[in-house]
Image (tube, rainbow, N blue to C red; front, side, top):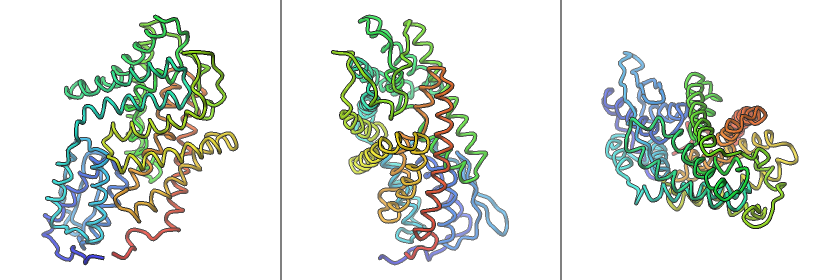
Amino acid sequence: MSPRLNHVIESPARTRLLLGDLGALLLDAGLSVTEVHTRLSQIAASVKAPVTVSVLPKEVFVADAASGETTTVQAAGTELSMRQTAIANRLAERVRLGLDSFADLPELIGDVRRITRRRPDMQMVIGSALVAAGLAVLFRCPWWAVVTSTIAGLVVGVCVIVIRRVPTSVAILPFVVAFVSTSLVGTTAQVFGLGPVPLYAVCAPVAVLVPGALITNALLELTAADVVTGSSRLMYGVIMLGFMAAGISAGARLTDTRLDESSARKLTEAPGLTGHLGWQAHPPTWLSWVGVVFLAVGVGAAFGAGFRLSAVALAVMTGVYAVLTVLGPVIGDIQATGVIACIVFAASQAVERRTPAIPSVAFFFPAFLLLVPGTVGLVALAASDTNGIALAVGTFVSLCIGVKVGEFVSAIGLPSRSGEAP
């Protein structure tokens, strides 16, 4: 093991600024305020800095414990790719362990922020299409709906790129993409006389915008007693889902589209679907595994994961889907979700301690795309289904319990970060 490099203590003001800059990077990387607070507090202890740390979703406050003098650093607000997120997490861990110099943080943070994606627009379009195709196959939509959803996913990817270039228009992005997606799928069904449209045929193309990461952070913050931040994130996520549901409703009314409420809304319902022939037929059940692959690769492309993290996402999603399809029919979907959340959270902590290049956020985020009731809630809102909304709420509560149990298992089964030897 390399020697510790954090024995040099910066001036108090400089130390507070460096901690704040690192916290801002971690916020931009998508970590919850709870996790950012924990990381910064541990690093402050490792460099023997007598400070207190407070974190909000967009700001980091580092105060001198004796004088109360405070340094405030605001997050840049620029979304980092999943690969940048992994590198930022690894940087924080290396600084905590003394493997990277605390004094070199400005250069190291700059290196992370300067990482660029190759052809990000193309990756977003392709990733959006793959996510749409993967979800449509996973929920066994008819073949015509799979093809149409994939095309709609391409269009949604283009819409995301165009609208994000006008910052003032980002607020209407969820409504616009849901409206465009539903109109495209609904028009296809009307022109070719294909009948009612499966719910996931209109929801799958907009899945890249479903606030899964936002709801995940809300979950982590609520379970860590950061109630104000967690509840505000959750409310914002619900508002985004509401905009999407409004877009779906508007698109359906414009094209006179009828949504098929008998289509699968949960993964465990998909194998029981019976179909027709030709384009109205459902994909065979075994093809759902291909849908998982498409979904994982699409997530990797859309969020800039890179090859290694895309492989991790594929492994995690495959495992989660396998366990969910086995446990769901036995103990129920809500209970199975809690069990899986516990296993995945504990496993993510173990993986992060042994392989810093795969941070826990990059490990369990792909799993939560299948578990967090973001898309489920969108489907329920789109269908005005009170039972579906109750399912989404129950799933969220189960996830909260599962994460807390997983955190407890991780704490008693693994050495804490503060107690690890460098």
